Length: 432
Image 1 (cartoon, one colour):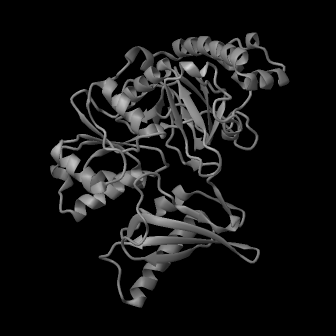
Image 2: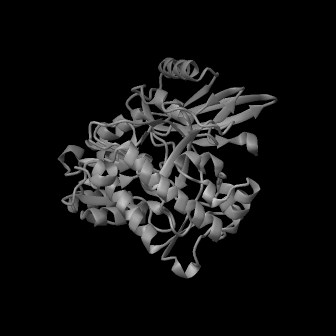
Image 3: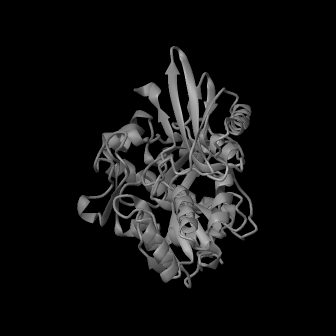
């Protein structure tokens, strides 16, 4: 089933025509209403009338998260505060938070996109959607809530945390769709097993997971643990929130709502466009946002684009599963290392649990990489020889995949702290 067939199944020519109209409107809106963008465009010698079609997008300035922080809270808004109907904000753990105002039309668009995403994953109005993302300033909880409501499904606003209650809700309310972070989905699957609850006996059939990168191997673990089909949902609070794209039954990339968000893939170093299929930094431009439209927002997420039809019938451009973030990439002795690479290796080792911690440090002038790996209690032995052999096998697999030496530390089951939201996987002590 397709939620909005006229928009999700447009021909490429029809979509480009719509994007042309909407980009020109956005360029005019920010030039006349946002001093930040007017100054940026004037510095580049650009007037709104210079933007003739989507092919001119490269003439427009970039926007970064630092720009949002520098103009906190509403310096990039394109309408008076009296017209905001909701304000969200992203985390301020690495500096000032970024605030994201929405107009009534913006929230309508948000709900439409999330309804599309849920439908893309196979959800219908007959489903019971348990929203286990956090509610509040974070866009996850309210975004999924409004989208599921638009779909016509029954919504269980569980929010994040209180895992014992999550299990009760899954059983008592007959939830058929679970929406949360992938790391929390793993935690819930563990909690079900610990409670002696057979996941296959639950009505749960679909998982819609996002807000953090996760590997295909983690998907397999989640699907096995919860006995469901797991789908990717993608979004950033700064641009909208979840629902900007979602995977379908083919699980061959995530369909982007490109009538609302124009995607580009750029080389993270040169900021030059890359051809379809090549991995680079994902950049989005608002085409319909009213309260705070952003031009060429640098997400720092690493992905690629592909076009053409899909077996599901949608024609919207697809983005690949996010590999990681350009600013999360670790450089260890000159080698680029992504947490997702480490996760993929560990999830192929039967004795390893899908819980790990990466610790980067520096000894003298040399960077060190330690991977703390939680071992299934059935395989944790008092025999030093067995532990040593397992550690050696994991180290060999990691060294081969990463092309850099690692120190592997095996820890007992439940030693690594579980996450009920976004998982923290990396401790970089070189910055201390």
